[in-house]
Length: 276
Image (tube, rainbow, N blue to C red; front, side):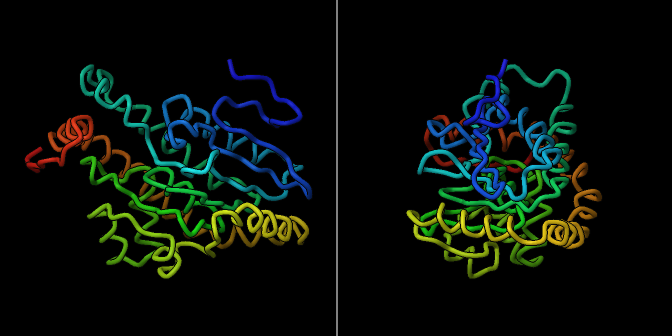
């Protein structure tokens, strides 16, 4: 059972620390700093309930999403359990991927309040996707961002294949999806992925100032502007999320994914065959 909410933790989730700050700004920290805030099954299961709680919390004016510690925002899925998954197989297929992962994306986009990402360290895979689904992105100059699903032999099904071509343009977006290349904060800013860069020691203050500025603005107008601005993105997600997750599910069963996991555990470069 998750801990009970306290004055210091608004909702009482196990893997997220949620604290109210002045001007009704809610700070949400992904809270597995010992694993660079990598997402394990328990953490993933809390994402949709977390986003829904925020959406229903009428006191919250603005949300800041960040990572605990000073090493990472979120490095995506925790690779620790992947070999076990390969060993035991997926007897029932991938229903949780098709149901739970789609709901995470929909629940984040359904938050009516503006959400700021304070990217304090590396944002990879699902971590990058969650940051880029936010409304404004502030990034530490030392941070990096990427969607390296392809390096694991996987489709970027949790939203990356939808977001990157939309935000970067088709050809540039495909380049990063095909290669999984890591982008520096400066590159991300130059390509328009993030709103502003900050020295690492100044990121929280910059996020606080922006969040408080929005919180003291006309809330209904800001929320309705968000709804209008996100309409095309939501339509794109509606059209593509199920297909993208289905294709990711297929790649979980490929030889390339098995080789990616083995090479990761054996600390060597993968040798992809591409034959399925």
